[in-house]
Image 1 (cartoon, chains in turn blue, brown):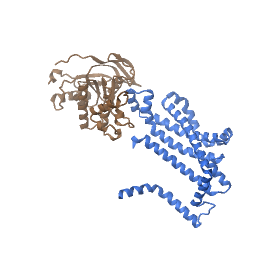
Image 2 (cartoon, rainbow over the protein chains, first blue to last red):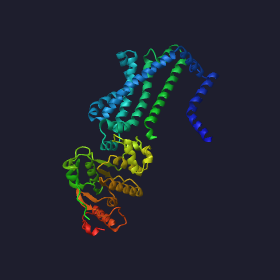
Image 3 (cartoon, rainbow over the protein chains, first blue to last red):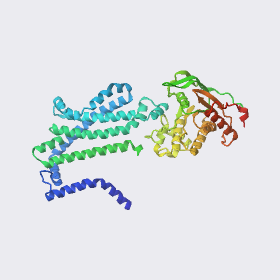
Image 4 (cartoon, rainbow over the protein chains, first blue to last red):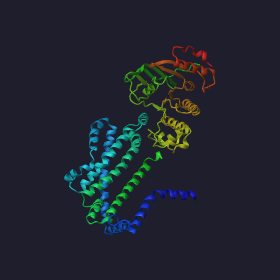
Length: 254
Length: 256
């Protein structure tokens, strides 16, 4: 009984601080210590959320943002992963590509926004392009290093036991690189949201970032705060997904 | 009590191996008969592991030739399975899947059978990280034997184990060897281990074989036997101070 209680308390502890913040925020808003023009009360934000949800506006903004994030992540992730594999495995590909990729990597991709707007306009392409570009490098680097750092002894063992080519890759090299690849995925999920927020804020007709910028025009503080909270929520969600993948793919390491 | 002459299984002739500037093997010759258990000893860095890796086909040699079963060795030696000092189990595969590496048909039955032979069938669904050092090496042994190799190469597989586990493993390897009649080569820095398990102990010095000593003791070998310690002492002396004594005692004197 005592043990069970300890366990449930442990589960609650990480949420204690956010909850305290929320309660404090509400109490101070009620007391009038926080002016509504600076920060609307949590209840107000929730109200705005319910309103936007009932008109279907919120749902369409969220789904558009999520679609962009996912499309960009998949495109950039796959390209980064493939180059990471190629350069990690084949010396010749490494020699040919790596220097160029390292040069590109060092350009902050958000600095390309003016150029990207001129190239693609402010439509979907520009946002997906930027997200893909941002996501590509963390996945590339971590896949590349993961493969380079696979225990040479294990690879040799695999060869001595008759594995080669695809079977060696699937049995030894890919699982050996997996923890590093997952670090890349986790990192790039962060980059994904960051890039999306910035590019939606600067140039968009739809999406959560647009919702926030549009609300600014009309001084709708509650909607702005709602957008920010949504980003926090989705950031946490992608972290949960990354953790789930780790638990699933690295269960031997538990 | 001369044994009938057996087929020459491994023929190594005039092998040279160079790492950069360093000549590790300088024209080494060695012949091993089918079913023989040979132990290779020598100071660290003398090239004993290198020789084993050459026989496994994991490295190239620069001169001479290696023939296994009258076939010139190219690439990986398909007759051989090797056990490494550090086990080299794949941490992301369960014990049974580690044993099944490289098997295609009926792998589960064969793997369980091999695990039974090393006494670890009840651990088949564990991750390697849950095993002790000795258990890991047992799994590695099962993984090698599941292929029914005609040649088992042992690269100091017991070097990292504690003394008791090591003796247990030596007994296990010896009994499996006498049961399955494969040829075996053991690289070790432990002369006692070499004398306890091998038909013949070979010492590598200066890139060639300097001592080639048959061990004529009955099996299972008694470590307390006076002839046992005599063999150990002589080989050790030879390793530590090569000018002091030559192996003069012939086999008659040591016969028991």
